[in-house]
Amino acid sequence: MKCRVCGQPASISLRAYNTALCADDFVFFLERRVSDTIKKYHLIDKDDTPVVAVSGGKDSLSVWHILNRQGHKADGVYVDLGIGEYSRESLEKIKKTAETLQCKVFVFHIRNTFGRGIDEIAKATRRVPCSACGMIKRYVMNKVCIDKNYNVLITGHNLDDEAAALMGNLLYWKEEYLWKKSPLLEGHEGHLSRKVKPLFLCSEREMAAYALISGIDYIYEECPFSLHAKSLTYKRILNSLEENSPGTKLQFIKGYLKMIKGTEEAPKNITYCSSCGYPCYGDKCNMCRLLDRFHIGNKIDFDVYG
Ligand code: Q46
Ligand code: ZN
Image (cartoon, protein in one colour):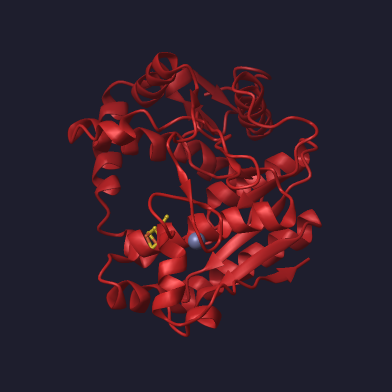
């Protein structure tokens, strides 16, 4: 198999595109795909001040790396869930990447604030860990943007994540979420940052290959709470469809984007939390309720590295 561009031996076959590329041309192809997505959906302007939500995994560290290579000087933000070796190793990889990129990373340690990890918080509040985690992450990421003057939050969601989430929303006809899967979610000036997903059209396999070829040192293990997630089942089903019919995931997401025209509007009829001022439904946001429950007060501190 030869590289479609230069004729040298190919390193990766991309059946969805009916092509094969060598390592250098694949890196060029992937980075071009990201910059085209950014341009097409107006994700990041040259005057923007972006910050990347990093987890230590291949997608978030790769998008951080790509953006900085493309001249979007982006810092990072990480929520340390306090779940043992997994959290420790993730933080190490993130600090190392921040150092390589010569960027700052803001770290919120859940254990330092709450005196317990995400699993214990979830138990105490009768939520599942992913629900407590999602709520805290959304709050903390937004707080970094608002307090530290970043106007756009970048996430590393890839094509497989989005296709699996869309499939789940369709299967159960979750209409309230069905139209909420786009590369750009508008914010509310001074209250809620804009959120963008530059890897929206890059598959999981492509991102793993990119990270490997580019020497990105990421954590291979997944969060221990992700193991029973329904999204993994949807990903397996989509992968077997892709195996039989290459390009299925891309068509699924592209067709959807065409229908919603690329942008998701910020939620309407929103109110603001009486304690912190961030958007919420009701009088107080869930994070302020959580802080009240543990008698912590409105005190969210970050460690800064880099
Ligand atoms: S939500 Fe759940 Fe993930 Fe949080 S607890 Fe782990 S699996 S990290 S994106
Ligand atoms: Zn609040």
